[in-house]
Figure 1: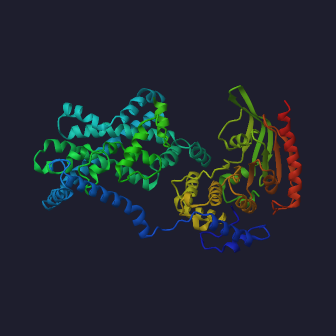
Figure 2: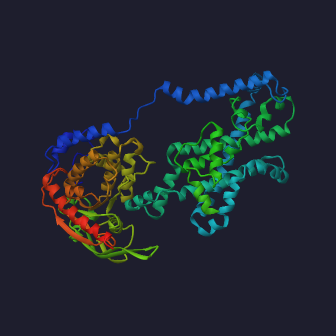
Figure 3: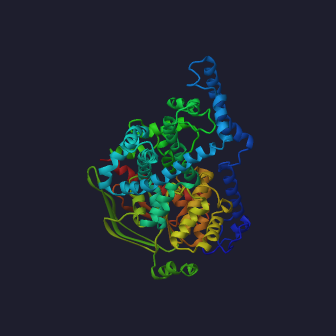
Length: 339
Length: 265
């Protein structure tokens, strides 16, 4: 390491560098050139995707899906499968959205939802993180509450709505209770899974570099859990994304009248895409799947998590929460270990 | 060699104090297996001199990776002592780069853990990338690099530890033959430039002869030192050199003899 003295000059001529080396191979030019060639042949071609490609690959499919749903929706309306107070037409719903925008109430609605979601998420994070760390690192705690946490995670958080309403009434604390009961176990479990699943190779590599004890926790385990900007963003997006639905679930119950009735609230009972895609603001979705922080898992897997289609999230969650359904995600293993 | 490395205070001090890069004395290792305790390494005694390139060669089950882990300090011997000149750097068959960091940041993490000041990390990381001829790779993510490039970044990260001893655990075994051949040249060049000591584990006889000054053959179950060869063939060598081939044939015969013994009972 001592013999290269090129300092910070990055544009050092490769061939010169090679021949300047003490006792270099007879054909240093060859080696450098050879290597450059190999690198060029081998390396993964990473090029910026063109705008057109992005449109075709990323934008077109969801747009098609939305259009399809709108078409089916409109067809159902025309076929009059349900009275229009149950199934309003897309244009009526759009009118409603537009009206509340013009009245200046739409952003307010959205902000109430988002702020609640964010608050709930932050509180859940504040509780779930230490809890998860405790379960992951202390054997006794894991044996004691690990199975309960896993069990709670398998329970859709909507299941908490009736008891929460009974105990706390229809108010903010009830909604936070439901959010937390759904999110805290998921965040804790996600953390446990993330800590459990760290490949031993990374730990060995870290240890040889001198990352032991706290430094290991910080530079290897925590760094991997946060998983880079994509996963971090996913964690933030995916979780509050679903949180807001509780508000509308509650609101639609205690805010009767044509305005509420005209919206597709009723479609809350339709699972998956058709229920929420027609509404561009996705105000009225009912996505219990999202109440579980898919993001926490996404982060643990170093994978972006905030996918717009809840079907996918639901599928993932079903896979994740059913240990007997074998899936490539590793968290089941930890759940099995917990149970 | 010790004088050439006076740039690093602590390690250089050690280098002048100890006449070896690694000293393995009467080391045994046993693991608890299904059939009771199993002896994996039996009374291994081996020195690696400063600046020396030694390959450990053996069939599977000879405990060569176990021995490397012991030298790296990742595990403790059941008996015997191991002394190294500072904490050795270790390279694996898998690149073991952290995928959440870029190539450059992987190297900088090693520098940071070594205690290099923040301002010096980036230039040093870039210098190391240049040493492995990857000057453009600083901001690349691990998945953007080819297998050979990843191993070179891993080598740069290992070099970032500024250790006097580099342990390599079949680092090229997962690469294609062409890339491996080029990386042999590359490793030889870097070894000669840096004056590092290398303890290189492989099951590839040609690779062992191509790279090493000394080839140590381990027998299997338990691992014992069966025989040693000093390789006098001048560097740079090529894997297809006649001299390399001849010695490889001799070592292979010996290795096969060792393996046959296990089929006889």
